[in-house]
Amino acid sequence: MLNTLSFMENAGARKISLCEHPSKVDLLQLKHAAEEHRHAYYLKKQIVKSVPKVV
Image (cartoon, rainbow, N blue to C red; front, side, top):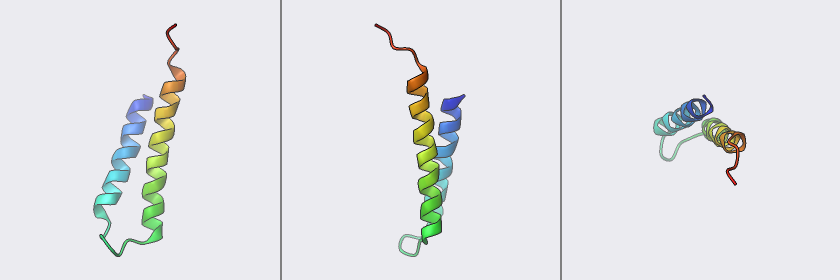
């Protein structure tokens, strides 16, 4: 489930980035895309934490 959520956050960030104008992108759009990527990263880190280590 966490992987699906991470994928969705990453896909959202990528869609936001595709809609950005190459030189006229505003800070709000950049901030939104960065937050989506941050959410995807955090969810992936939670997956790593939740998997027990094999010794």
